[in-house]
Length: 75
Image (cartoon, rainbow, N blue to C red; front, side):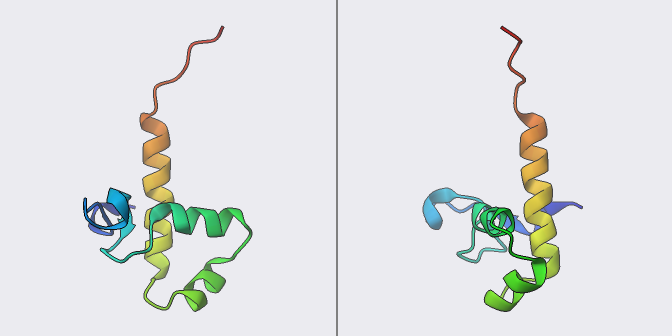
């Protein structure tokens, strides 16, 4: 999924954290809800402005960011 049309970064919104479609819901918010065990359906019910593709975009953004991290050489 190409997350670039769904993930926005605005310096004046949520301290410049990556947000979903300009909303005040951050990528990290969505990831924390998933990590806490909420299902996609539960997240969508709790946040009616979100769409299923927003959750997938948050996951794709996190995966891309993880891929870009520099690997630490073994000690």
